[in-house]
Amino acid sequence: MINLFNAHIETLSIHRVGNKSRNEAIFLSEEAYRLDDEIAPLLKEYFFKPFREKEETYYQFAHDVDLEFNEMYNLANTVFNAPNTENVHEVSKKITKHLFEQSNHPHIKNGEVYIAYLTNISIDNNIVDAIGVFKSEIKTDFLQFQENESNLEMLLQQGINLNKLDKGCLIFNYKKEEGYKILTIDSNKYDARYWLEHFLSVDLFQDESFMTKKYLKFCQDFAKEVVLPAEDKKEEVMFMNRSVNYFAKNDEFEETNFLNEVIDNPDLISEFKNYKVDKGEKYSIEDTTTFPIANNAVSDARKKIKNIINLDTNVQIKLDFINPESADKFIEKGWDEEKQMYYYLVYFNKEQKS
Image (tube, rainbow, N blue to C red; front, side, top):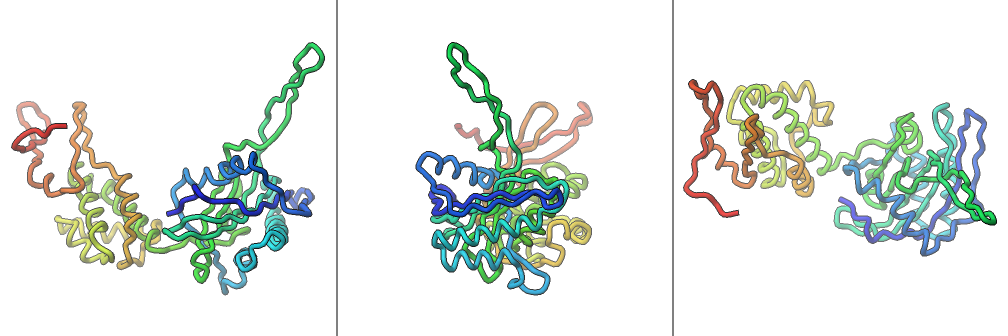
């Protein structure tokens, strides 16, 4: 989990890259950009807003042979080892040149490259520095107005929309041995391989948070695609209820214990295993049976899981995720022959005040 609220831009370098296949040039600024108090907060919002709005999926630098052959990993090391303005700016030129070398697909757009050294970022409750690499590609038309004697003239100009960053990544000075923890966004996916694979050369960072999120997402889809058709909506909700509670009360995930605790119907255990064989690779859990559980990922997942049964009679039944045994004890489903309708029978002693 990251917190960018107190992040500070220590240094900023701005360059421009063209498209090599169209013989467009590269422009490297001679000196770092001098930020002022007026533009700094605007740039912070421009750079950071996309990372606050998307789900945190971390990456790490990787290489088929060895991490030391990953160019961006080495350039990040050079910056973190000496984060003074002169060194950061010189490395920013090398990063921009590296990006330019990957810009040879006809669809890749030219644009400005912003490379910032960032301080005071919180990640996993640690305060760290980071390198930000951002690229603006899409230009927006806008109007400027100018007084011309007795008339007001309109001037059509082009510029960057500060509400939408096209591409960006945050390289945190954290987990260096694994290839650093990295967040990345790409709003214009006209060539998905260009930014992630060719420029950054990253793989998914498969830590406990990643595994917890992926396994719970796998369980959620299993509940929807298998439990619901085989049982009913109540059992779908209760399966996810029990699953989340298992993750919440344990520090380690162990698949056999998990299945025995959350699945009452033995037939569904075999269905679960078959579903994992078929779909496990999609969630990167195909060979996973044990892993440490990340509590923050469980809390995030709980917020996204619906615990409501919506009925076609405009009635909703909300089940308690904290006390799941209540649904098993006090809610019964049946069929009314006279009305030819299903019903839920709910037992209670008294109504609670809101």
